[in-house]
Length: 234
Length: 398
Image (tube, helix red, strand yellow):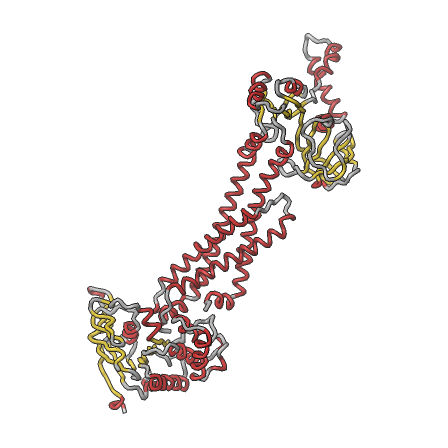
């Protein structure tokens, strides 16, 4: 089932001679369980595209269809509660983990659950399950500052998965990790996509990390200049 | 999930230090409240305790407390003779600084007619009232005297026969009650050297007049000695059922004096001597509250700025604004309430140690708390404004 479809998406910053075309005529489609990588050098538009998909940056034109509902078209956002959509259907993984520093690992994973009103034993059991799945249950009561980079990223992944997100957006999830830990994190993302049937869109600049991804889109100057599928990659 | 509490747990050292710092400011605000109340209570205490029907003072003077008033002592006979007056007693009040038990002490003396006159101490908690015409005193407990202590004042020594703790002087100093002649003597009687000097001076002045022979000047001298039978007010008790306004009109018209009821006397003090201090204290309290709000505001702003990336993450993962508002406001209120409670506890345990009387009133505490609470909400606005305009995109990138 298709989770995300983007048609002719564009984003222009500024106007006149200061105009910058950050995205131009972007088209892509992501279905349940898909692993999608966005590759490109700095300034190619990867993060801008991720911000548009995250519903926090207004595109200039085009259309976004999320989970069967048109949420953006040329007239703007189609009256959707974007924060609600993000907390219920989208999970985020960041380059610098971005765990809340004053919450323990367990509380960080609990946070998105409490935002959707899930409390008590049900929520606690979900947190335990996720931390065990990420092999970090023994560090549940540690503050992020006491966890290693790899451990923090695993907690961040658990947080992204807490609400059974249909779409996981990962912004350079391996950038602050060494190669071994990066490969392990990417392995986790692949496992999540297949087991949870969540679509994963990961921005990366490191081609070694996207091995096994279903789709790879290369961006340059705001345009998709290359597209490969799993079959063509292999 | 109480994010504010978790954050404060992590920064508990800074939080406690801020609570203590702002709490000390609140202590000063609450002390000012107590000082304000104490100032009014003390300023009015003697008037309330004396409570005659009328205070008769020098014409056009708001005396004897708000302004100096001087009357010849015998005027009280004239006042006594006015229709409707049951009793009229001379009253003298002044402040002195004298050595008591080797220490320099500042206190006020009340002189009254000890034989049934008005103006004496109302409640004596130890000993008795003055019963002799001379050399007995009733002292306020603030002076730390004991019954039977013998205190030299001026040329004579006075025995403490009673102790009181109700009224104090309008400056909050201890009161000493003496018989009227004793009080006049303590105030006006000079030592022999000073008397001799003055006589010499007068004699030289009189001898210099061509129409007076030296023997005539010598004879005139006693007549020119300063009068020590001076009082500050006459306290009046009216006959039952008498119209006070008519008596006042009579005194003002026929005796050329001014007369005030006790209520008017209280108002004279409130609008006169006590007013400037009251305004001053109000200004200090306002300034300190503003400073407290600014400090809380800056601390909360700093707390919020430190969490700005976490706030961006929360927004990105879909946290509604109320979650963020609650977090910032809760911290601000916890800080304000914590500081207020610290200040309240401190002042309630130390107010007896202040040199001036602090009258701690629950109403004032409540009002200050409400102002502080509103200030806490106000203080969170700067942090809230910053938190709410934070873009979730800030969470992306390194």
